[in-house]
Image (cartoon, rainbow, N blue to C red; front, side, top):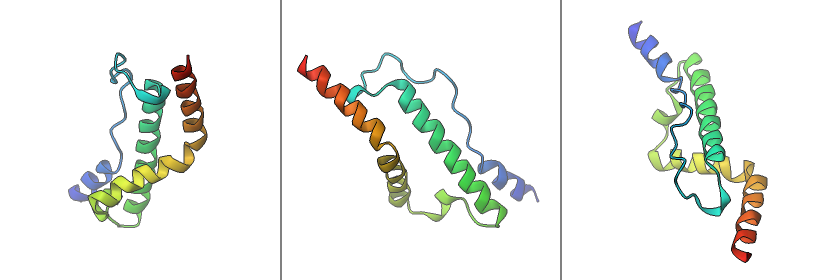
Length: 100
């Protein structure tokens, strides 16, 4: 019973705190702290949703079922297609910054 409660609580990621990213860092390609923060929030929300669904069916958390390299590829694979428009805009901003 206690193990089930611990596993259920592990399915819910700890939310990001506002302002924890270094606002003085230099991020390439015109990305902003806000964009990175939003991507992290979206990933944690997605992971929590998937893990809770798996838990309700008596299955292990996603990160427990997958090999580390595959889990890492999943993260990259989710953001590559969904952020194409954003990344395209960022790339244009970066190109125009270099031209000036």
